Image (cartoon, rainbow over all chains, first blue to last red; front, side, top):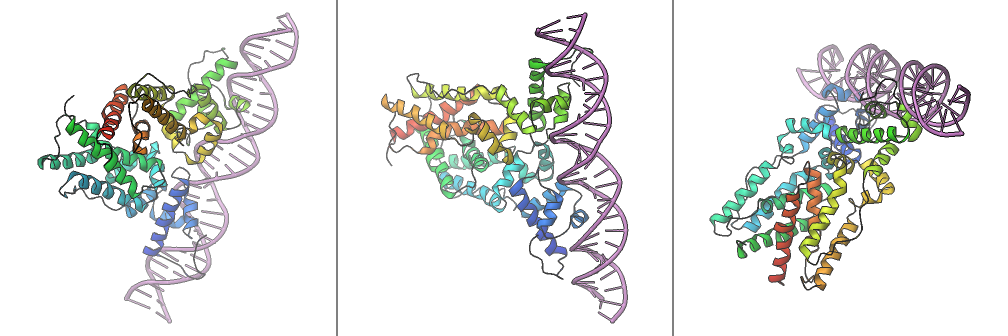
Length: 205
Length: 205
DNA sequence: TTCAAAAGAAACGGTTGCGTTTCTTATATG
DNA sequence: CATATAAGAAACGCAACCGTTTCTTTTGAA
C-alpha cells in the first residue's frame, strides 16, 4: 500500500525497519486494540507471513516496535547548582524519549488494561510511568541536593508538592496532544517554584 | 451465569436493571473494547436476543447503562463565603457522580478514541470531562466571587493555577484506583490555596 | 381463565482477524 | 553463474462475535 518499486524486494534490516514504522503508525492512528497484522503488513508494503516469521503475535510485534524506538532513559539526575534548573532539566529529559513515539500511542497503551501487565514485565522503562517510584526518587534526590546547598528546607514539605511536577507532566501527556516547552516552564516557574518558596517563608502554620 | 431461580422469569424494569448492572460490571472489568453482547447477557443471567430487542448494538447498550447510572451534574458553583471552601465543595461535587460508576470504566472510555465522538454527542455531562471548558468556567466564577469579596486579586494570576485543582483531580481519577477525601483536601490546602496566597504576597515580579 | 406480550433457548449466515501453509519469485553470497 | 535463503502472494481452517430468526415457555393483565 506504500512505496515499493516493481521488482524491488526489500529484506533483512531495511524491511524490518519499514515494519516497525508501520506498526508505530498504526498504533498511533487506531490504537493497540484495533491494530491488526494485516493492516500493518499492508502499510509496510509487505505481507502478513513476513510478520509471523519474525513475531509470534500482535503483542510481540508491538513490544518489538516500541523497544526499538524508545530511547533509554538515563537514571542520573541533573545537578546544575540550583533547584529550578535541576527540575526543569529533568522534566525535559523525561519528555525527550516520549517525543520519539506518538503521544496517541502512549495514551492508547496507558489505558489498555489487558496489555499493561505484559508491558510492565517486558519494558521496565515503560512501567516507570505507571509506578512512579523512580520518578519520585529522582525528585527527592534533587530536593536533597537543594537542601544541601541551603536552598530549601525539606522539613514539613508535603510529599504531594515533591511529585507535583511529574504528576502535571504526566497529566499533560495523557490529555494534550503534545507538550510544549512553555508548558514545562509554566509547571516549574508558575507552580512548583512558587510552592517551594511559599513553604519556606510561611514555614510552619 | 448469575442468580435466577428455576421457573422464575424476570421482565421489564427488573430485568433491564440487571442488564445495566451487568453492562457496567463488564465495562469496569474488561473495558469497552472487549465487552461483548454475549458476555453481558450471560452475566445478567439472560439472553442475547433480549439485549437486541432493546438496544441496537454495543454502543447503545453502554450509553444507556452510563446514562442510567450517571447522576446529573449541577451547573451551580458553591458560594460558601470563602474561596477555600468553595473550591473544596466544588471538587467534592465533581467526584460524587463518578463514584457511582467504576473508575476503571472512566479510564477505559477516556482512552477509547473511536467511541469518544459518540459519547460526546450523546452525553454532554461526560464530554465535559474532555473539553474542560465548563470546568474552567466554574473555577473562574468562584475566583471572581472571591475577588468581589476582596479575597484575591485576579490580576496577573496564571491561568494554569486556576485550572490546577481540576487538572489534579482528573489526574488522580485517571491514575489512581479511587479518590480519597484527603486527596481533595491536599489539593486544596497544600497546593491551590498556598499558590493563591503566594501570588498575592509576592504580587508582580 | 384466557391470551397477548415478552423472555428463554438455540441455531443461523456473515464478517473479521488469527495464525498457518504452500508455492512462486527475487536476491545476496560465494 | 549457481544456489540457499528469504520475500511475495494467495488460500486455508479456525474462532469470536455480530445481529437475526424461529420457536417454545412463562407471565401478568384483561
